[in-house]
Length: 344
Picture 1 (cartoon, rainbow, N blue to C red):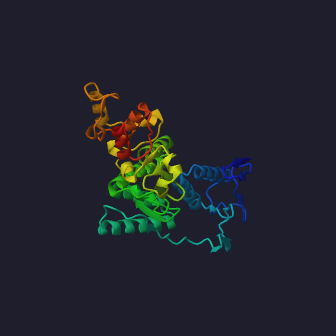
Picture 2: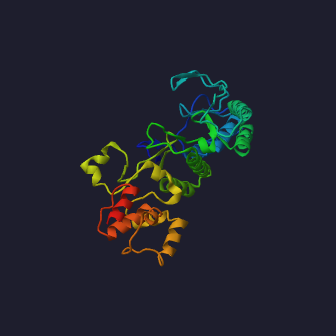
Picture 3: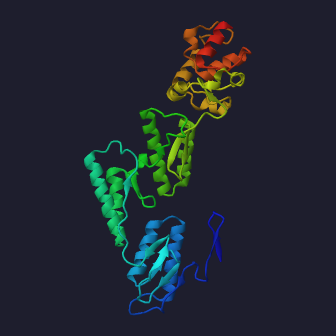
């Protein structure tokens, strides 16, 4: 029996439904309270939990096996219940002698905005206490601390990376690759959405997590890298920023969607143009636009003269529509679109 893990490799399972083999002497009933079939069932269940990334339950099962006299070695894929400890072996280049693991050291990730120095010290102490509890297989206490960190401080702990962070700061802005750095208010809004997505993934609500990812793309042009736990703002697809060096080139003059970073950041007034797609043009329609629509009965039409004060209240998509109706080019900044309509 084999099971693919999606990485090009397959794990070969034995007749017991797992890939761990017994080593050492026979099961010693004086030290082991489980029979062989029970051991195999628990090892299989633990492995399935790890496949599903339910590491808490997997740790609990490992603690139950150890308490019952069964030692499991994940590095060598072996188990034993003969009352003997593991001999010295190499695991990822380090000696492992079966003794208790030292507590893992954790570091803070992100600036911890909103936390006082006293709160940060308390969190550091709780994270260290949790690490000590895990080192001695006191998983019930470790889970209590984990829940307190989440409920009292809005903190998550990443055991694999050895880090703790606020949920809103688990994903950090990649300053090297981002198209630009949003202001602090926008970053807080993005961080809140990312924190909601972290919680959704932890509760295995992947549909909600995917929806939040799409919201980040749609509302903030944000792409998320789950591997590095970083995010960036991307350039609008098929467009360029006004003010780029290429703006005066012949090729740039042919670009249809040229906006400034300042116009893009002013999302709330609907002035950012997402392109010619009718669906996306309607996506960010604001109350001001609706008021413009209502006013069109008494206001200027495409055949009426337009002055600068009226045009300045219109959004980029509306200005481009006016230009298309007049058979005029639709490229350029908002101010250039207005001037083009006035000159016509």
